[in-house]
Length: 235
Image (cartoon, rainbow, N blue to C red; front, top):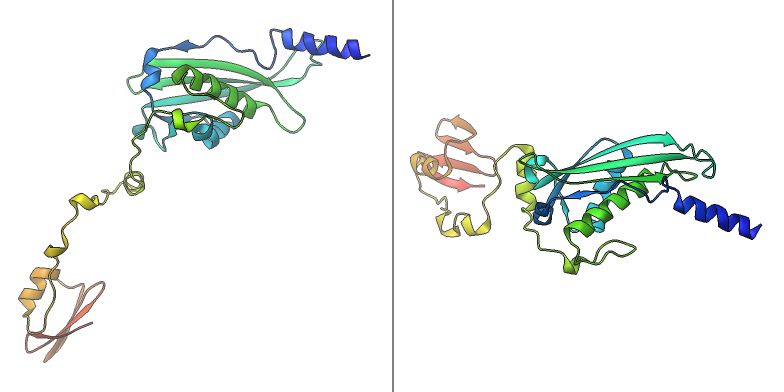
């Protein structure tokens, strides 16, 4: 019985439809210049790759293609093996293609993984695809059981969180501190200033309340009170 199980295990591993088989990948030397990747695809393999890209590779995940050096497109299909020794098990065939912004295909890979009891095998196949991409792009970095040793990864100049969020929202990013207005430009509203002087500093008020002798200029964060056209209170 033990010999029979050993024979079946060896036959499965040697089968051309083994879970670890995959067509030979093509590599463009430009793949080694890629640092940020946008993962395309609406399937289990793509989702798994997005969740683990930074752990399994030296690449950084981009939220949209415009922020990425290249796009990694995942496709996935399910099939049933016809091999007798595999017991007609369902399997996931996951393919990925890395494309530069100019449309040049830099790298591709296809991997097959048999389904488990509670999974389709697509997640494991995505892991193998990313392992191969990592090995081809950064061969000097060791790949371990949990992922890569990031101390050996090339540095990535990531945009600031504020800049990224502003870009996604379609608004201008705030100026970095080095370009922000110096504190000396901030002017103080003082008692005795005229309405024209206040408007020159703060701009026109959001709301102007005219109570005759008393006038209130209401701004977002403050209210300026005038008596006889002069500032008497700021709150």
